Amino acid sequence: MKIMNQFTGLYKGRFSLLFFLLSLVFVLACGGDDEESTDETVGEPSAEYLAALASMESGNKGEPLAVTESAVPVATKQPIIISGDPEAKLVLWDHLVTCRNMTTDSISSHNVINDAGDKEFSLYPSLSSTNEFGVWKINERDGILVPQNSVAKLWDEWVKSGLEDTVDKQCDSILEKNIPTEIKDPVVKIESDARVVVWTFLSKCYPELQLNLLTAYANASEGGFVVKSGASLKTDHGLWNVKTDGTIKSMNAKALERDSEITSGQCKNLITSETEAISAVWAYIVKCNPLLSINDLGANWDPKEEDYVVITTKVAQTRASNPEPDHGIWRVTRDAQITADNVTAQTEKIRADQGTEKC
Image 1 (cartoon, rainbow, N blue to C red):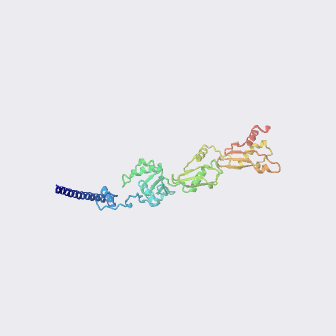
Image 2 (cartoon, rainbow, N blue to C red):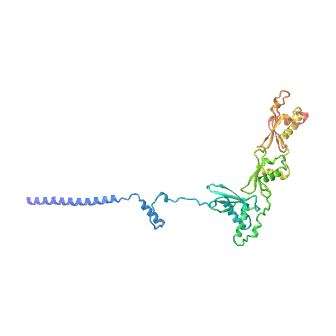
Image 3 (cartoon, rainbow, N blue to C red):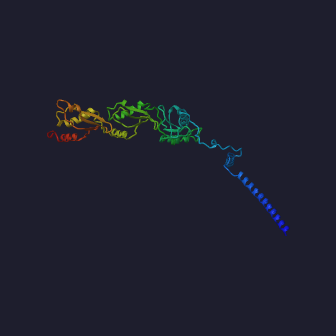
């Protein structure tokens, strides 16, 4: 019995040892799997992997490219097609001669930088041009002609009708009737000619206007010239467009006002100087002020209101002998309308309107 118990104990001990060893092997095996799993943990994708993926998605079959910042597409501007004014003029000339003979000297050009930073060329008839073909624009990068006004659009339609037959250039004769008549000999060739045209018109109601007080410059947007009052001219006569054929057109409200005044024949320019304004006020109030001298009054032109302001001079009021009282502030318009501009002048006006017997 004792021997049996020892055998049973030995057996149990060996069984426990065997169980322990098997368990250890199992644990080591599981631990090895964990280590391998740890080694193969997925991290950030490599550059080669991203390049291969990009190549696959784009359909490339060559070697994958390394993904770098330089590989990101960058928007670039179109190359410059028109490098300068001569080339821009040549493009328009080539277009226009489809239906009418002319030279590149017939075209004037100037360029400006647009909001995108590109040069835009404005093309219009030169002083020597015998054709009025309107105003065109062309961008240096696309080289496409774009008509800018009604005359240019008429030409464009007419020219395109001739492009249907590039051999005979059979431009539509019906469309040609819409084209402005050829200018055989321009009446207005230079800036001084344009000033003369406007001065001749304005002098009908403003004979004192001096020619050299008008200024002129080329009108790139509409062709011809723009004429305006010079900086030293007291009266603003507005903006005028003068075509090469000598026709003029008002370009703002002030010029329109002058145009209406002159064409109606009702000139308002009766008072043309400070001296005449002073004379008008003096004649109006002297009947109640017999000692008032015309030299006691002074005047200045008010360019904002376009009238004369007449006052009693300080010298007249402060002289030792016979000081002249203040006769107020008066306004005199070009059409000789006299207005009392303060209380003192209004009092004088009441006396003057009542007549000498009530002065």
